[in-house]
Length: 428
Figure 1 (spheres, rainbow, N blue to C red):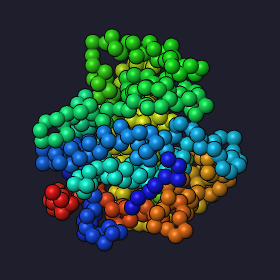
Figure 2: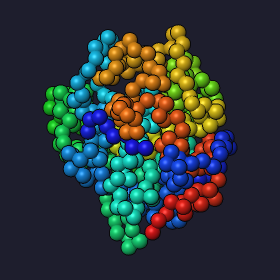
Figure 3: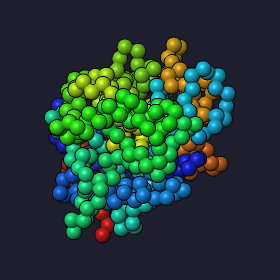
Figure 4: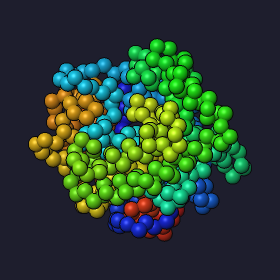
């Protein structure tokens, strides 16, 4: 299913099984398999790896007037904030981006967003490779991640893209902005100059709030210190990630999967004294970007992926959110919640747009968020008349969206099924 924008491993100890016999909405069995990034690194999956890397490199280098350009896709999430409010805010707290956080629309909005990116990758792949392209996920709680941190494909400076050993700069490492994000279009701390390249922990991404051409004094000191260090900055990142995964993050995912009700499972405003999947997601992003719980006392560390204003400009963000979507699907399978239902309970702040992040440009603060709430700016192309996507369009990732996930932590699919499905999808 295409969602155009209105504007531009090892088997886990805790497994959730799901039925593999299904057909997608097209009536065939060509369901894309979103693999773990570590599985994608394996030699037997090289054709899928090459196709994905080339497609991602392609969208990053498209002109910015192309809807499939990574700049336009990343901009859909948050900054640059150039979407005018269409309704009264009815709230002193507002969010200027389209993305949904701290409310019940968090998980379905990102499910639609990931499909939007994936479809762009498929469109930009050559005809012979379109069937090979799918968005992989970084399984942050796999045994390998818990012991080794990020996989090589998310850390190497260069990647191979064909059987002739041709290499390109790794398109998953970061993104150099083809356009400035001005003070008027941003939170002043996160305005960016033309040519800025995204940063992860242990670097600081903060810019001067009056002149984004310059770093803040603290950021300048932080980044200078890192560059003068005897250790490679990637060492600090891996150390921070491994520490965080083993000190609360894995348990946060486990705890979220024990919550039966959709609202408290989905977001931090509804979770009460439980741990929502959004809470677990935030902890991972903080480990990648840096926060007060850093392993090393690098107090100025604040990478772009750690702040919602800029996170989507780092390609790693999408692989992380694909894992969040995978865990969301595992939760649906576990509790047989297809459809999942957003309940309207008194005192639940996650169902009101005015709480949490505040209403986004197309929301009013007092509106109730439901299964039928519009997930701006994504359009349901099959509808007549055309309308925005809502949660009911996203219930089943297989039959409605045409993809599924391969094996990963907390859940598994049979590896032999992955192999059979891959052979069906390959067309040479």
